Image 1 (cartoon, rainbow, N blue to C red):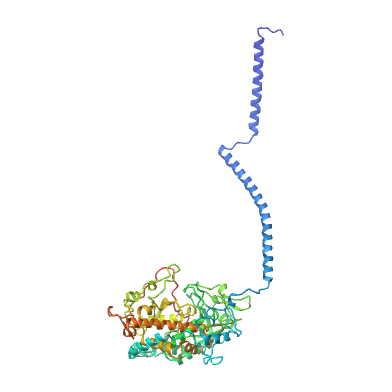
Image 2 (cartoon, rainbow, N blue to C red; image 1 turned 120 degrees about the vertical axis):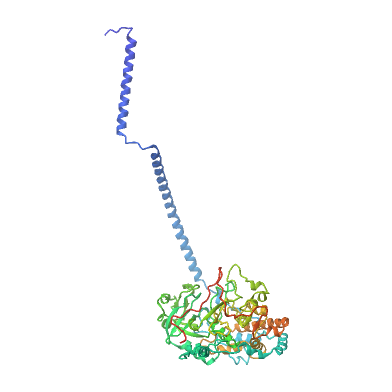
Length: 602
């Protein structure tokens, strides 16, 4: 149709607007349709967390894949390295062993090449060393070095003639001072030695049974010493070493392996098995409180205590037991669980204790025989009470603070011990000196407490020489600190001085007498020969210390039968309460174990 030219712009504008509206409506319809088809959107924060988790999972998956690939390569290299090491070890083991020396094949310290052994004894041991003997730990049965004969061997040479001879200067001083000593004072050391049977008969009208060796020994325990009658001890030793064993129990509270034997007569004893051979010496790096205990030390100390005239050690004898028939078959349940057969087909057991009760330190037989020491149980404390006394010369038992006051203060005895009411009067200080003289001879550093009988009222208690398992550890070392009670206090009994002087100057030496006393033991020889020159050397040191004490103080002040400090009021030394243990790195106090069945005297 005809369009007015004036209206043409208006027409074009309306067409454009209509077209735009249609496109906008179409776009709006399409957007609505897309929104309707799309899922509901998450909140903004949740979307970020979800994306982060997906990214982390993807990263871990990639990391795991990488590590797995690396591990496959590493395992291949590891197996290759192990195979190479294994083959190299086999090649080394297959090489000849010439030139390799084992530790136990070398000469032990204190052998016949030691400077402490003189000419005849050196030649004696040189000849004896040519004989085949067993070597190694726990190889005493049946191979054992033969002991020297008391009559001498090899062209009349005396094996007890040592290089260290008595000092002529010391002998001259002793001869002069011994003339000044009033030997009648020895009677005051023990005015009345009543046995337990006599004391109870007088005070309680009580009769002590003597039906077996144990009760005979208990009945003869004296107010001045543990025993007197040697026949009673011989009968006791025979019973301890031969009576059939009925039951075996673990001795609770011990630091090392100890067993309680119950015999067919219901009496009991403590058994310490052999751990090392006679030639074994303590490691110099071991502390005294962690050293191994030695069964033969208990036996030898008993005999030394006897020949020194103290008679205050607990009777101990050697015995060879069958681990299978006498221990395993008679053992309690918890002990029986520790038995096993070693790769060498020997019967072994571990037991239970604080130290060294593990498979590495097992006690093994040869193949099932085992040597040990058997120590009689003291009477039940309910019947015969005892006191546990802390020694004033007790060591620190610490790895950090190794020196006690008495080891650094040479006036310790005068300032502390002699002023203590327990030691200011009576026999207690002299007992302490006797005990440390014996400990110095045997090399025992482990003396922290001592026991005493608390049954003889009116009689001063004496120290029982108990727990000597760590003695005879080294022959090349003399611990002079053990002798400090004698050096600082400078007092000694007349009987002790007389005995030491006789052994020092007379032809029959201390070691020869000791050797003769131990020769009757079932497991003789008790000590390795190298301990004999060490004993004689230590006796010479004791006599030298005594000589200096006599020079400085005179015989009247040094040689006394009963000690008295006039500056301290006299009281009953038995009436006191023992102080408690202080804290620190200390060893557990050894306590005589209560018997499984009562050993009381009826």
